[in-house]
Image 1 (cartoon, rainbow, N blue to C red):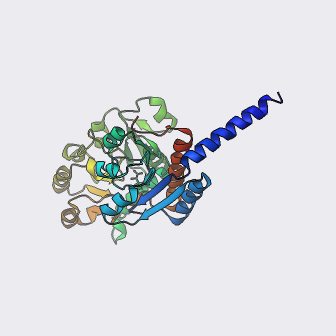
Image 2: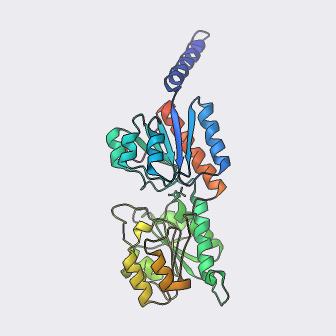
Image 3: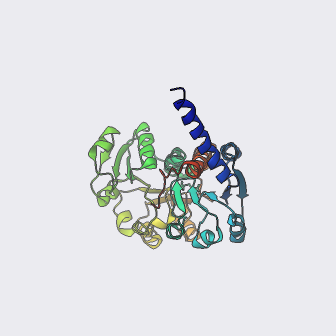
Length: 332
Ligand code: 3PG
């Protein structure tokens, strides 16, 4: 025994020293056009430096050239909605891993990353509560005429329909229930009735049925080839009188022409979004108080969400570089 324990201990030490020497000069770049809260950046720095690595920061950049220059010698990249295109991956000759600190990774060119053997991860669930709170806030804002004088309405008793029952959808459902709403949900990938029953949420079997029931439709689908421009005229026109579409997902999932057509035909429909549509100016002019878009995406803009997602991203980078952990890899 006496000889075995030191042997194991030495081996472990040897392994750690081996990795540390191997990784001594690893540069982890945090490139955020929309920076993380200071506490989050400090937390990321601690994780990186405690692992013996180097942190580089590129914040509030305005030119793509700045990102291209900063990634040139980066071994790892942490981003938010920053666009990690094939050009960025090509410029990052040492790059081994990209972590999107957040849920949606439609901003990362997965094909280019995979071709180069670069691992891509997200940090699912880490900023979900912030997004869910914003979705509810947006419903209240629209229900009360965007906080302008006049008679509004209450959320209690209304039907809240959740399109996609993932991390954010589940939290929106829970908060909606707390406000006395009837909550229904549809998710093509979550078909087990138990998941919904367990949360006291009614499972709906088709997307058509979901929209036809929705006083408030909260969108939580990702943006991908299947979902792009998938929310348009047919679905919106089927919504009940006075219905509101709430988008804290992605602008790309909306068929903007179809949305304008439905809102023109139905003067009771409302659209509130955290991601301004391409035709925001036109919509504002045409629909007045029935339309609202945040000036800049705010869903994950809380200190808590920044800390959760930023620190998770830093831990995932280190855990991959040191231990090869690929648990959250999305381009397997
Ligand atoms: C996400 O996909 O996690 C959210 O859209 C948050 O994006 P952000 O980090 O750019 O605010």
